[in-house]
Image 1 (cartoon, rainbow, N blue to C red):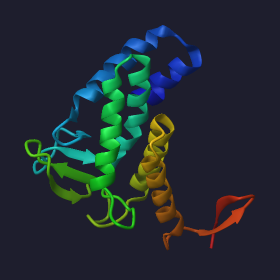
Image 2 (tube, rainbow, N blue to C red):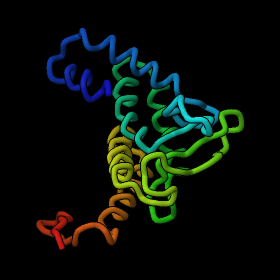
Image 3 (cartoon, rainbow, N blue to C red):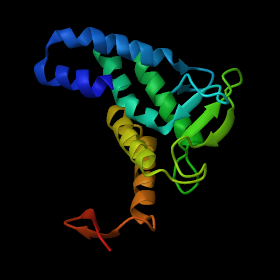
Length: 181
């Protein structure tokens, strides 16, 4: 929420009044990171979750990379990398579809459950979550140059583009295009 609004305001205007809000927000986001779980906690609600992490968090990592550089806090960039690697390990199924929520034990760091809060079923592929994963890993690669992140983005894109529910695809000018069936 902050990086899209205040981050773009800073990027466009270079008005330094946006920076304190961005710095404080990045610190709060970083404070939600656990070295035990290796991820950033998403929510503080839910009766049955202990340390819920949603795929949506991949959208926050671009902000942490930027803030790590801007505010000279390399731990932010390290947290972003660790979160992305841990999410890659636990949020994705073998076909590269993702779970919406992965709940961790904050003491042991182990996964307690993999489920959904907004999708159809725990094992369904939630389209919006897939898009967040794709964008997040693309930006992680752009910021870190870790080839694992680019490969993950490519796998997610392939899952989306070859899903039976996706419109028919074809190549035009070397670009994968979707056409309606």
